Image 1 (tube, rainbow, N blue to C red):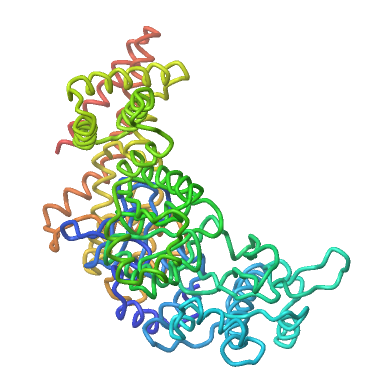
Image 2: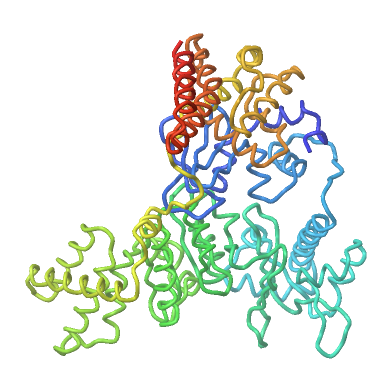
Length: 606
């Protein structure tokens, strides 16, 4: 793949980029010593095992093994070919890259065409809204809703006219395959006819964009009366509702800056909040929050503020979403709105400043919100309701993982009802034991499974201590990636005499890499590797902390460890044969093997 683009161009792009800056657009990173760490974007985890080295311009996940340089990261996270990833990175830096004939399959080409069609449709609908008589009514509607022209342009809002085939005609003129356009949701067939028509008609259009800002779907709000009120694009090969959060492309920088995301229910809420200077807001797409969306949020922030409608349905949805987010290790708070109001309503009636101060900044912890919710259907002047409420709150307190939180809310409960703290603590412990007994009856998972779930670690990598020869090979390869001279020295003394298959392959690639007069650069070396497993292994080794200088004694010791390993394996085999000879009472054979073992061990010691 690397042959499509000149090596000098690739090297220039890599030099102009900071891997920490690029990866920070996808992962919330925190500095830990020389490296930056975060939650891996390639597998589910709660404890960070993803590491980025600004010095080496490499990343590696110690959980799933993913690793490489800035180009391989973009390839993996965006599912792009090598040349596409290089072009994407070059565009972001304003660098020119020649047009490359990609070697993708027909499937890849179709996928890209579907994305191009959505970009075209987004521009088309926006033009109709902003610049035509057809879109005037929709534009006036948005202005009446309080949206400013700049906001409409920023979110690329548009208008789909009440016409069967206006978009279809445009797509035909631009050479798009109509079957593909049906598959990606821009066109559809009416039940009574076979002919394809525009999916969206007479609707205000909300482009749904991915993390990079590319339109992958649409939400359309009907003008006037009609059902459904909102019509979304269907699930397609380029649009997965469970993975996508509306507004994430615009909100991600502010989310990482504040380490906080605000979760809304709908498009209007996100846009109104953005205009009210709450620029870290996102929304799920007309469905309940999904595990994948929760995972995306957990990689970008530590705190989530849920701001749903003030009615019962909204508050119930808030509880459901909050429970899911807490499972992902997030600090969840709830912004409480008055009944019968949604965020958009509140902003228009009370103003942007009051919304930000009285609602968002006044968000309460999830546990406090649950306590308030439990009160709604109770008359606390009635003894039965009061006792029931206390029991329900204690059950919720039992689910809290931190002792400090449990203590805080029990004291709050004791103060509110003038109860003995010790009595509440005893009752809470009884509930805890009862819950545990119920759990055990259902069937408790094995300890290592529970531990894995709590730690958030996945069983991808065997964490056993590596044998000395294997560590010697790894450290020697790490030095070889950093030095052409050391590689030449190792080539003379050891050649391909490594013992691990992947290490043998990496050594061979390094000899070839330096033989082509390439510079000592782990990132550039990794670009030469076509095997995904070797890329992961090379990045893992390159991330090892090694000294800048490899002494002669260290070099000799590493090579000894590597060369001697096969001999130790041979000794073990002879020892096994000796035991078998002893069992058969073949003393002559046993004595001969014992003598050979002694001689071999003496030779190794020398």
